[in-house]
Structures are given as C-alpha cells and as structure tokens.
Image (cartoon, rainbow, N blue to C red):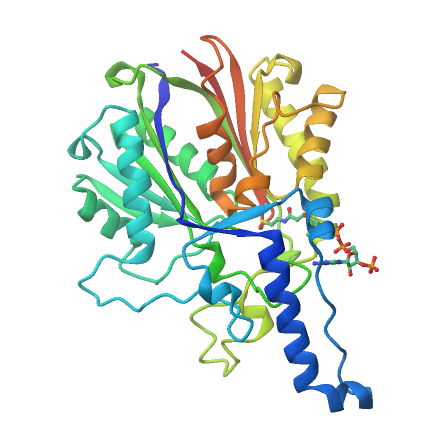
Length: 373
Ligand code: COA
C-alpha cells in the first residue's frame, strides 16, 4: 500500500499575549469587586468570599507562563471576564473560519499544494461556534477546495482523531488529500472567573495536510506508520452548553455552561491511560518507546507530560524528547500536540520516529506514529 504522509502544517497565533501577572492582577481585582459587592452576605456567612489567584501557583501547578488570545481587553476587564467579539453578519466570514483559513493556507504552502488540490476539509475542534452549516463547509468554500467537508469534535483529541479519519480516507480512496484544521477559540469557553481553571487555556489554530506519499510535493514528509484511538467515558472534564439548554430553562451563563474539570482526578486517571495507550500502539507496530526520537504530546500540564514520558522510557526526560509549548501557549485543546509537532521537528533526520499524542475530555486518547521520510 502506498504510504500516507503528513506533508505540511500551519499555525495561526493570535496577536495578543496575556502573561500570568496580567491575568492574576485582573482576576484578583475581580475578586475584590465581587467580595465588596457581596460584603454583607459574606459577613453573615451566607456566601463564601472569593479567594485570590497567584502567579506562583499557576506556574508550579501547570507550567503555563502566558497564553495568546484573540481578544485581550474583554478577558482582562474585571467587570466582564470574557473576550469581546463583534457579532458578524451571515455573509461575513465567521471567526473560526477566519483563523482556520490562516492556518490552512500556511499548511497548504508548506505542503506545496494549491487549495483546489485538496478534496476534503475536516474542521476538528473542542467547540464549534454554531450547529450548522458546518464550519468545515464555510472553510472549504473560502479556501476554494473541492470534495467534501465536515466538523468533528472529540475535545482535546479532535486533531489526532481527525488525522486518523484523514489517513483512512486517503488509504480507502475517498479523498486524495485532506486538510485538517483545528481552530480553538478556547477563550470563549473558559470560565475566566474560576480560580481553579482561569489560567488554563489559550487561543490558536493549527492545520495539517494528509495525503498519499506518491503525490506529495513537500520536501519534508512524515509517513504515518499507524494511528490508534481510544475513549473511556468520564465526567471529570465537562461542558454542558448545548442546544437543549433553552428548553431546559437553564441559565446560559451558569457555571456548568463553560469548561469544568476535576483537575487532580484528570491528572491521576489520564497519565496511566495515555502512557499505556502509547506503549501498546508502539508495540503493535513492533516498536519500543525508547526507539522514539520525539514525543509531541497534548499540552495541558507540564508534570503530566513528564510523567507520561517517564513511564514510557523509564527515566526523567527533558524538552528534547518531549518538547513543551505550554509555557508560551498554555493549553490550546486539540491544537497542543500539533503546535509541538509544528515547532519542534526540524532537527529530526530521515528515519527518525515520533509520536503525536493527544488526551483529554471523553476521556479520549489518540496517537499518530510517524517516521520522517
Ligand atoms: N491560585 C492559587 N492557588 C490555587 C489556585 C490558583 N489559581 N487554584 C487552586 N489553588 C489551590 C487550591 O485551592 C488548593 O489549595 P488547598 O490545597 O489549600 O486546598 C491547591 O491550590 C491545590 O489545588 P488543585 O486543584 O489540587 O491543584 P493541582 O495541583 O491539581 O493543579 C491543575 C491544578 C488544573 C493545574 C492540574 O490538576 C492539572 O493540570 N490537571 C490536569 C488537567 C488536564 O489535563 N485537563 C485536561 C483539560 S483539556
């Protein structure tokens, strides 16, 4: 069978940075304002006072130092605490499509392809900004690609799950070349008012071209040796926003309508799940974890990534084996492992092996084993 390759990646990085210091200053101002507004209830013991956040905790607990966002002012406004996006008319390009176009065009350029040579677009992300028409159809039209397009959501594993669908479509002949885009406007579903998680996410969009090696023109190609996906139901990462909300007469701004997690449980449960998944996947391909030159892992927590790789190779590892982009980008949902792959692969040589692996809500774990051609 003709090998299937990743022949190009693209990255859209939003224009604004929020450092932990800026984030914590605005959060702590929000806490002061809330506590002042509810001083009587707090004094009466009928309401708990909000507690300030800290830069030291964020860096130590997560490894995150800053995040990129599409809108900074709205997020840092202590009387708002969410991005401000101007509504767009139906005949204007949607926000998610706009950032997907940027990353998608860069991936096509890297793969040395014209848009019309792509015959499938998968928009794979943790949230879609509307139910229909599919974001992917809008992106397909704006890019000028042919064939078909659809949206898919497996939260933080959306990108790797989409790469498997793309590789299968190319192998089965359903598409010759697939563009996977992962527009993650995480700032819109993060609860910036919740101290436990307000530091976690950043906005970004990644894109990946998957095609048959025979038709690929890119100088740099990564053969997909195998993909493997697994899901295991858990409520520990959850977001209840959805189209039934208005029929349930629930508050669209209630806490459960944005990202919620039991971070400690996620850490404990997902580390063994992801490490075993990668090991089994490699073994099924006749490979040992120690043969892998680089792990491009999902980026949610520095400690989590270090622990997963330590379980795999039996020793402490540094950035060279498992590069971390969390410090700069924070958690970017499905895009994290693709950002790591995008930024940290140029030094690998032909024949080197790598693993792109995502893990997150679902739970879901997806791995893509690649070899540089
Ligand atoms: N500033 C200061 N202190 C904070 C804080 C903040 N912003 N948020 C929580 N704390 C405090 C807590 O109140 C708690 O204090 P206590 O021990 O006195 O009760 C302490 O820090 C530890 O809180 P905990 O929530 O247990 O922190 P943690 O070490 O588990 O780190 C995460 C939190 C979210 C960074 C970490 O659990 C994580 O990354 N988990 C994996 C998440 C993941 O992969 N999610 C997938 C999302 S796609």
